[in-house]
Image 1: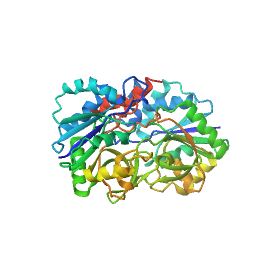
Image 2: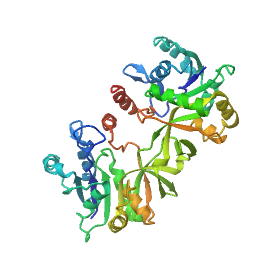
Image 3: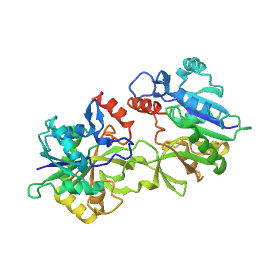
Length: 225
Length: 225
């Protein structure tokens, strides 16, 4: 079994709206539904675990019913941090049958089906794989208000999601490191164990809805699909 | 005299449209006009040099007349690369009276007036200053298709524009290094000379119009001004 954990447990405090970003709508459909559908329609995915803020579970259960998501296996409550939420999702997976786990941001509605497939396949081959995109900005290393150097951006990538792992690897990575404050993605936990994480080159279209204006960008990208 | 060089000499090949990105319109006004107006209304700027593709100069001269840009001193032709274009702009400045030169991307319509002011003031104080924004993505260093490490993003910044320099520093930086292929910004040229470039923390709103969908994002940001 390959499982997807869709993490949508954030409180949306950066938005300044009542609704968390993953529940805001694009063309009348919540952002997280787009993300769920991408995994629903991916043949390599067998089950989906959706992680939500506790207060949203009841209401969102009704919403998901409208969209006929057959692979949606469980909706569970998130924790205080992203790592806690993924950990909760991981514990909802049956260890006996688990193969690959794909962790995806609920606020990334634009991931392509082939990007999910490629990342799962790479993780099956190597144990751990992270979808990435090119860095288009010029990146500076800074110290004390000055530029130390311009970093060669051909050696850099932006980590996107999904990030895919053999179940046992991800479980161990969490058990050993999940309380590290610097955790911004799951790949980092695996890197800390000394596990080699492969990259899968993806598209910059796979944006994360973080600010309100990102909704306009997502609309524009979706209407160009 | 403080001079602004607005670089809008790109051919726009990344867009797949006939028009280069800097001439596309937001609410009926070309992107580069927004950029020009930001400098027109900045009290610290005395003159503006606009660098355009040769083929656009005649047509665009008519367009700029509509917008009453009193500080627009010269419209000159760009070169084959960004560095060539900035170099042409630099040579249009009177060395006798030049103090600070602010180089700005014509495809960045959203820079704030106070960001321009702060960057000019910092350059006057230290010789060289670069407007930057936080890195919001998780950044990985990669090698041979694998992740080497997650870079601490608190030590990284994205280089924006304007980038401001004492005239003599920028002139020397260009004279010594302008033929380096790795030049993606003017700060890099100064860094190569061993000159300390100060950073000025700016906003991620100051986006560069690179892809067609960035126009929607810019519209959304501009309507929120």
